[in-house]
Length: 478
Image (cartoon, rainbow, N blue to C red; front, side):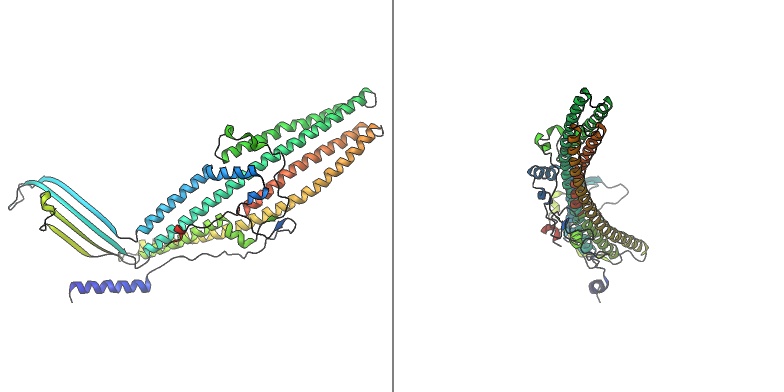
């Protein structure tokens, strides 16, 4: 048997062995470790099982908010960073895919030298030039899945980067909506605070008139003055909160605070949706939450890296060839005489020391186990956050309903007390107590309106924002 036949037989045997035993460790999609279904905290009068729309912020029907969200998605610096990470992952994917193609290399060199006196030279000068030119072609035969696994791992990294970017977008949209809601709620609380101050000023004027007429003493005047000053002192703090929300909006939309349009802070009504929120169910939640999908894709990528490590247990076979020419002058490089070539496969196999390879496999398997645990954890956290947000929202609405009743009762009591006070039927202390109760009830209701807005936004954020996560066709190709 010739050397050529022996070599071809060996390659054929390795090929069959690869088909029989080679690790093609392309991971399947991991499944959540828990069952999902309808939300436990989804109360019928609070939420709806309808799917959450992608652009959930449009449910508020506020064109100013729509413009702010569009600005944030276009200019936010966190989003720009996440897009850069996607580009980096895509570059790595292109590099992994290039391993499936033949690799071509060109080389050329030129030099001038002298042969040592002690070295005999037959028929040539000791001084002279040396020129060479060549080309090499190499193609790895991916019998054992190293390249396929590398491409699968890189695709998982791209998908994870895209999901991370979607998570950033969800966060930015929620933060932008929250900042706008904070500014609107602060403006509403300012309006309530000013109305309370106006009401107390009217009561103070009436009390002073009664004091001047001798119907009440100076203590009543002093006490209502104190209550008036206390309520007036809340106005600067609320204004500071409003301005802080506007400054946050400027940062989120990629603007300097001075560049924020003045009409952004014009709204003085709390941002609310007066209808059951569309939330879907737990199954939709896991499909929608970008952090869950990012954890899933990382687990798949790490499982594919097990295939990369296991492929090192088997020979790496490269088919290749080279052609080149060496000569003492440029003119001789391209003549037929010095031209040479080489064709044949190259087998690279680390044997018999397998421990380094085994160690890399164990490390890859440990990484995959950790990623699967992280995926299960992301699922549990997503369900917990969604249930908590829904429960908090329901309780916030319930508290608001109670506070509305409290304000209505306080207003009725204040009207009765004022009338009785004008007729001299009660003393000024009872009037002061009724005014204080009404002021506190109105201020508390204004704070609760702000909390309802925040809890609504927290629900949308916990649900994953409804962001569209359609993968690009280019990223889906193998």
